[in-house]
Image 1 (cartoon, one colour):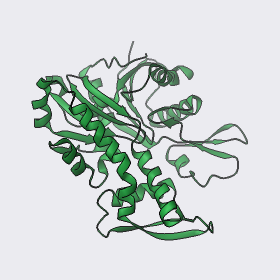
Image 2 (cartoon, rainbow, N blue to C red):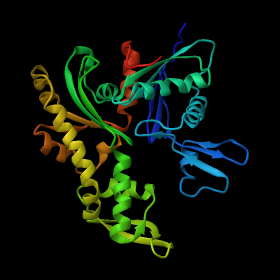
Image 3 (cartoon, one colour):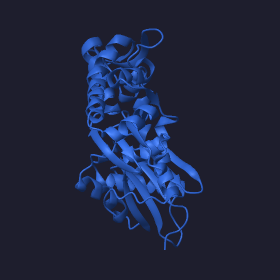
Length: 332
């Protein structure tokens, strides 16, 4: 027997979000775990573990166990996720709960099985279902999938960009690009080292990305703190907006090309719905300054950033729970 209080999880490369039916969003923390190798146990998870990234004490390893939206380290993911569920009070009680977990649309069968295996590894009392991220993102972005109206979603997370045309809780056409927010960060780090001689942390790169994006920001530059590549000493640097924009260009161009490709393949009957509903952009990448305008130029139709884009996927998965939808995206 399934209990009330079903759970929706957006298990993302950068952040994990947990939604419990009747309680709403109960947890939103970095997908990070710190292991103390001296005793072989978990030292921290989530926000506390991410705070150690790049400055780990002796014997502490900080692990980001998901890569490109899927599990790269099964054991670490299991420890992290079950820690999150205990912390949020999302599990427990005598009855099994329905748990819906979002996975990239392009995830392989093996990758989908690895997600389901996280729960089996700890013998959780769960009935686990997997749902394709683009469907959840579309529902969370405001498309009325219950009515059968179609929509077009571009969900830019940390590890993957999901581009999809959907209708009636189903994917009509889709592409999953394993290039998203993390690839943008790495591009900025590489550009800063080669162009300015400064080594930036991923945190600093993310800050530059959000401040400058494709537009260069209000001042045309932003300040960042890193290490001098030659001296290996701390250094404050004014990073030009054009350096960041140029670094981001290959990733943005790849996303734009994927949007064009999916648009060119949609059925004629879906075209009116897509034009009327506009392309909606969700995920952390939706907040990149200048991105919506760029995609509008590429697509030739309106592009809008979804309300609360960082939480679209988990809100959409929660909507599926409320609508009684059976995700049917893979392993159970």
